Image (cartoon, rainbow over all chains, first blue to last red):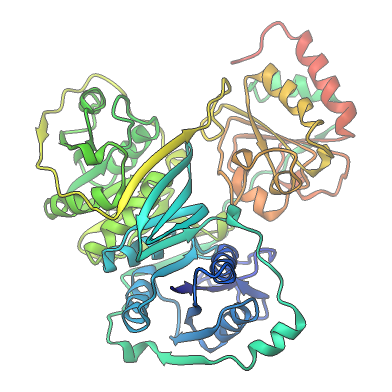
Length: 249
Length: 317
């Protein structure tokens, strides 16, 4: 069994986001970039399945600029066998990304495609579901547990009401929740070894899909600031303020 | 311009956030139709037809719709979408799972999780977990939109009598099978919709100490929240997590106890109407969003808080 894992390079989750002064986006120059956190869970799960002898190959794919190679390389350092970078200029919408991934799926013919449930930059939560629609494959989103059963997967999904379990036939798409597993750190020897693993580079424009933007970003702004609050000196004062001033208790 | 709203329900009842989604959808066009897909969902359909903003209800029933599997839902919605300019539903796990499947089939670039309708094609949505707001304009002829329910008021729930039309069911998708749903049952208000939320963080120091949070929540009829740090430390289960990777909550009153206020936590609660922070570190970032900050040891402050509440004649429920 072959598993394709899609990984995205995003601003590190610990970085305080700053909006550009001209309101065209957020500041990305000289900002620490990392793998989108739930994509780390997706790679981890694929590598664990391979280590359990249930998969033969794990391929990491990223769509992005040249530097997204670092994100693919990191996936190789934690156990992926081979990398693919689909090179693009600028930011693509999830619809375009899923069309590019569809081309890679057609070429590599994986049995499973894993990715994070959502990217922490655009917060769209679309790519996995869109790819499953394009391929007409089953989808298991927000997965917190995956069990492989012959040619099927039993997946536990985190939903608003609690947990849901579904069974999906292979081939399938799974989008991973943070609770799925604990991603490992790459060891130094594995980082060195990853440098020798192959990364195939493909220009997005050579894949013959329409990646044009359908959504115009008119402006990006700071969210409205909360007006400054006050410090209270005692619990009694706090309760009095909540009762008589804010009127919430 | 006709707008098609996809109702979220459990076959008997509408999910409360459907009412918020109706409000949002009604701002995109006046000719608002609501679609309900399920099995034996007559009761929920009737409630949908009673919402005054809904002009027509379309009901699709089949056994394979009983458990809301997106692979079954999407084709029938795509077929009905022909007559509409906007397809709308809530950005909760139901809508997040379903809408992109519809959008990709319609070759439309979805606009996710909007918090404001600026015009029929322009919307405001948070990005980077609410650390920036983007104004975006959809250039697609058909628009697929998910809305953040807590950013829109619920619509009027009764008084309407929209006609109910039945539409033909689609085929079953054979590669996805629903097995079970385990709903977390609790006597407390649900975290996502509670009027008051009391949350604990790493400062609680142990799972056992969370009983202080429970006592305070009992007194205020509140839901119990937690920071990611408290969840990761194993003090409380992850369904209580508030933040970028947990739930986004907008209660009237949010009380953060022993929570420092990491970016990821603030993203989940900073739109709350009134925020109280109790923390012994006066420099903790949580104070920058708090309306009322109390610099104190929570192990002294929470028991005192309970005593003060006991002195009150009445507490809002």
